[in-house]
Amino acid sequence: MNDKKKNINILICGDICPTEDTSQYFDKGNYKNIFNDVLPFMDSSDILIGNLEFPLINNGKGISKTGPILKGDNHFIDVFKKSKFTALSLANNHIKDCGEEGVLNTIKVCQKAGIKTFGAGNTLKEAKQPLIINKKGWKIGFLSFAEHEFNAANENSPGANLLDPYEDFDTIRELRKKVDYLIVLYHGGIEYYPFASPLLQKKCRKLIASGADFVTCQHSHVVGTEEQYMHGKILYGQGNTIFGYRSKSTTWNEGLLVSINLTEDHNLVEHIPIKFKNGGAHLMNNVEQKNLFRTMKKRQKLSQSNEFLERSWDLFCESQKALYLPLLLGEGRVLNKLNRMCHNKIINYKYSKKNLMTTHNIIRCESHNEVVMTIFYKREE
Image 1 (cartoon, rainbow, N blue to C red):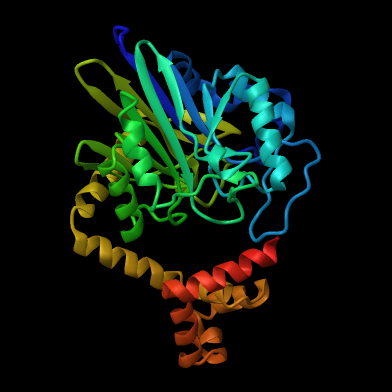
Image 2 (cartoon, helix red, strand yellow):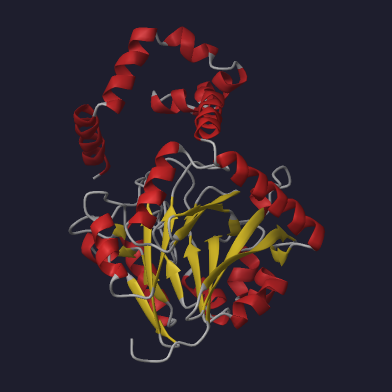
């Protein structure tokens, strides 16, 4: 760290994935129609980071899983290369949608394009490797974690990096000694929920306490709230960057680019609000920006109350009961939909209180949970 540090700007994009309304642009490498008037901010950054929410593979075969299969052809990387991305995070719940081959091919395609990757690897050890970028006299560290779905790297198989509380917080402490500034991308939390759940808040605060300077939570598809904690900042929900347009969801079409400006005297974290329309990302106008920041500020004030956070989380979980219980109990799509329409009456009729208590205990007890998780994991092999 002998080089004189010059002012540096780091720009972090949220989730990026081609959809029906953007595939034509990805197919042609038409990055200008994807990023539009956001491009000047990307061009002026010294380090440009984003979350690649899909594997790159030609004719990739999807794995057997719940939820959608996301993927894109190899040449879709041209959009990221032309946009001058420095690195892409691969720790997310879709990187293994086309199996181990999809993970390995994605890393290979990115490397060939001169784009660094982190958060996934050929083995668990490789997936856990941090990315350190030396730029303008600075050493900037990046780590990326995903929650466990159909995506995990293992000792001898490719996949995403999952947060291991027994080891990774120590890793962060050691990494912080080697870098000037440490950024963590955490791909997790509950979709469409704009506040931190109790567990998510604990995790992110621990990431900061262990040495991270900034933590951004992706995956939720909604702009959340921000918290200053100890020396660092946490963004609970960055929203989408490129993930298609949904006419019935304003929040889905909103996102934040995180701009981090570092000087020798201070660091400044700012947010650039964007919206998705006409097949691409655009800067919000002044009115839209003010409305979004006003909403975030209101949420931030509410989040200072632990009582509010607990009550808000309880209410949200209660509203999701008719969706989650059929999924947990392995019911099909038709019954799931009917149960939601009937406000959970079908599940209440079909399963006794004792049945549900047994299921609950297997989930909450660490020992029972470990047995069940191992059984289901073996079934996936």
